[in-house]
Image (tube, rainbow, N blue to C red; front, top):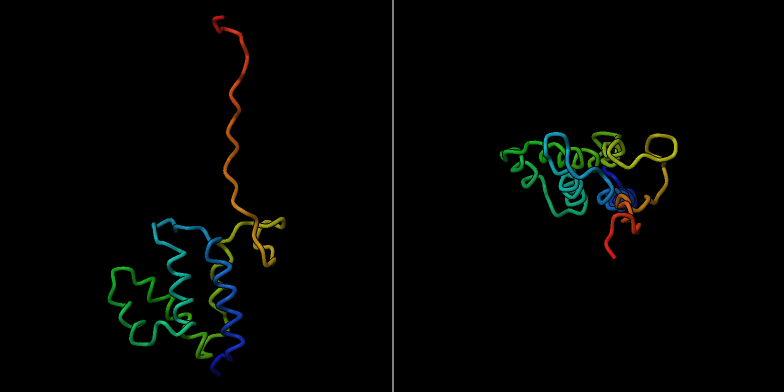
Length: 124
């Protein structure tokens, strides 16, 4: 059974929340965030079946795969929502995996060591 507009809107919101937080590149150099955006585009109706099928001819067949996953979920052909596949690429929560919250910690830059202000070895 095809998903309801309410279910689709909820999935789009979840994918949009996940997108800036998933690991940017896979071990093979694939852009995971681009793939999330493809799924959003499918669910928003920006990519139809013809567009999705055309992705299968691209060098990156993974784009076709994620687009097709979104299409299958939208049409009720698979129970697993597209966002489920991205949970493993989200920042780890306190339990060591996806923590199920709706907000993610802001990315922090590593702290730089402060320069020593010691006068040892300096000329006056």
